[in-house]
Length: 129
Image (cartoon, rainbow, N blue to C red):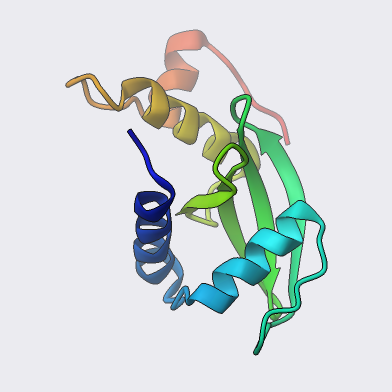
């Protein structure tokens, strides 16, 4: 079972790993407020803007979050009102959504995840963006 604390810890780890971003409590609150469309009154709040990208499941959504002029790809868990993870920015929107869906489908199995290219070849799909 995923708890809010575990999700926050994972998001902080991925933010540091993928973006070199120290995800503090006030920054996390500012990101969540931007995603929820609320005004954030947190002390030392930074400028954060969020734009919706994709709904991954009934309660997980993917967002592009602009933190002081730099874009970050974030997965938000609406059921728990928590940041789930930070995805790599180099991927296109569609690739990121696919990789995230595959991750959640295969998280309890021992088979390795498919890469996006393998998935495209297997399904003979050409994506035009």
